[in-house]
Length: 233
Image 1 (tube, rainbow, N blue to C red):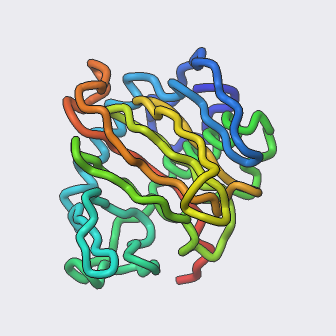
Image 2: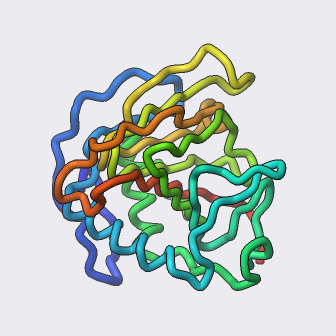
């Protein structure tokens, strides 16, 4: 894996290969895009974990925002998210407690933060305690929004697998311009923290048929976002 790999492994995972990423583009302070960070083997392994998570104990579901069902379906680890709060149990689904964030995922998040920032100490105090795992079908969209339901303002780590999406990364004041549009392809890492932690962002479009062979997905897009809630309990 790029730069600093996960330390003190407790289980065998496929997150060890060095990568030569595509060139990064310039983004606002605190935002980082690392193209092709995950290998195809790592992507397949994560897709297999996604299928396990999606079957329960809290199954994947489309959350309802202001009475409307989202086109994106989500399964949560650690804490269950619903607009606009977190809980340990899925009170809006079946009342079951969500699965814990696995240790390997915490180490993966730390490695991602170091790789994105280039700072070997960037993840010294970073312990993500929730993961929102979103699945986008061809027509799914995500409107411009802020990730502000967390008490903590630690960085958000985002991993993409499957079809490429158009990702819109904006400013911290408004859903409208200025914003930057970039493609997030299978295996890409995106991190936003610091001055960009509350930037509005969204997914206006998924590009069907762009998932690379061997990534584990024939169609659709998986987006794993790791966060620190700052919550107790």
